[in-house]
Image 1 (spheres, rainbow, N blue to C red):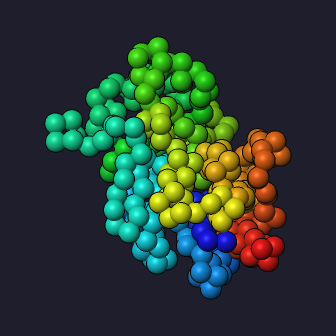
Image 2 (cartoon, one colour):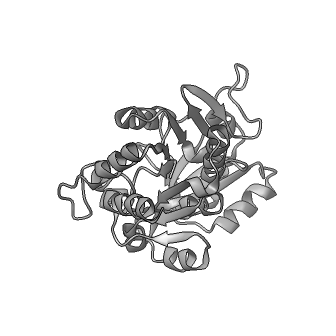
Length: 271
């Protein structure tokens, strides 16, 4: 194994976004032990996350990683070099950041109006972003795509990045609340992972990925194996059927960092 691609929230990080928090909320060092096992095996760890660049940079720095994918694959940083994976939609002095350009297109306002009561900004995490507009709610992605296409905004897509369960993040009247990112259509976590693999010279059989959402699972076709942490099924039972239908997907018996540790040590033992 030459590289582990690990999602942050709901995967490597436990409840309250802590590396040392287990599924029961108590202390657990298994996430850190997964990182140690990678280090001992000479395997790189590359974080891939929906978080903004500065947040993933700090997390990568804390674990000693020199590469990471941020804002759902919109950007990749390798050894301090930034590459945008947004198909030509890049920051400019005239048009501002990619976030600004998406806002200027009218797409966020259009979606908020069309899905009033079903979609809202995911504050405070929606602030200070460079690319994606981050929402929470419950919407039909096919309908959202049709709304964007109908407005000539097919260069954007709304992406489901998993279920939100914290009580203070729920919306009245919605049983299940998800996090959604509005990003350039060509960007994805899978593309970010594939580009990192290309830059490093990794073959699919050299790497594994671990995550907890539909968007994470889309990485499965480009890696040797994708592991879904157990807590993902607790939050979103629909993932179980998808995991069973996809080639190369394995479901860990443990959640959060313990699930990442299971994926790493199992892979190392098998190889």
